[in-house]
Amino acid sequence: MATGKPGISSHTTSSQRLDGKCCNGNMPMNAMEDQNDETLDNSNQFNNTAGKPPRNLSVMRHSCSSAWLSEAEQDLGIMNLKPPSANDSEFQPVFRSGSCSERGPKQYMEDEFICVDNLDEHLPSVSKLSTSGAFYGVFDGHGGIDAASFTKNNILGFIVEDTHFSAGTRKAVKSAFGKVDHAFADAKSLDSSSGTTALTALILGRTMLIANAGDSRAVLGKRGRAIELSKDHKPNVTSERLRIEKLGGVIYDGYLNGQLAVARALGDWHIKGSKGSSCPLSSEPELEELVLTEEDEYLILGCDGLWDVMSSQCAVTMVRKELMQHNDPERCSKALVKEALQRNTCDNLTVVVVCFSPNPPPKIQIPKSHKRRSISAEGLDHLKGVLNGL
Image (cartoon, rainbow, N blue to C red; front, side, top):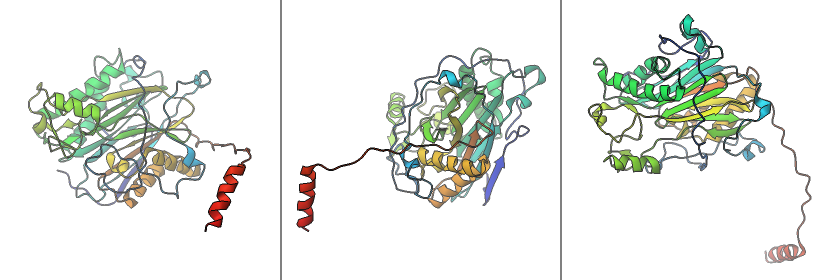
């Protein structure tokens, strides 16, 4: 297990930086495969309780502190994705990112992350892209840092070297998760009983593919609205519970087989057993693909240490307000981590903020209502009666 150190480690990425292993092999030109799966339904509960959520709750939402939300911003609800309009066809995203990682109240730091703002600069010259590309990921480790570090260092290479990559990135990404998981089991020098969640974002041109296994979360900021692009894979979530029980697993107090608080993870081979055996703990990611438009301003990738104490909408509102002030994604990630610590998160914290434009978000103009309000005679009589009775 790795020993964590106190203090905040923050990074701002540039086109020369890669927080992970440089990938080798060919990188053919391709477009994203097929249409994206059904858009996630983003119904959210807002809760004012801070701290670690009860184990029997699969997902918990928290309202944002009033210091971050103006009266107008509180009206910005969580919306579903809509198809891009023809006016967005000329939009070309420009990638820049910032990150922040903090040990928090835990004894050890087990999180890892990777940020690649310019994918082309980390590929062989024979495999250059004709369009812009980027790759990001957060990996929330448990039982040690080995699984998280191994995944960070190898997953991008497995994706671009996959034989399916030329035909479709969806197959390549899904296959890469399984290959990383099996390669980690074969790494004799590492502790294969450690595990990690894995959340990645692969962007080629305007097409973004989110892959998630675990309870980290990807949230898109769309003109101030929060759009969740991943599901939290908690054992108590109905779809995960049914899958677990079908494979012979059980859930005790919100934990898979009484041991793990997530339903999907890489590593944890002491639970999975031998390769090829059916196991309720899955390393298969859920995929969400979308085409970026001019309204898509930034992406937030965060481990559950953030989402345990903060709603998706609150995080989006905070980042937008920060960007309008200084336009620095690194300072945005720091602000989210600082806010989560003030709310007494019980976990490590890792946040990556990715902007899709070199400019800060525009101010949202919300027209004021000019409707006149009046009270009926019946209502006025009722009000008089109440006041006279005081």
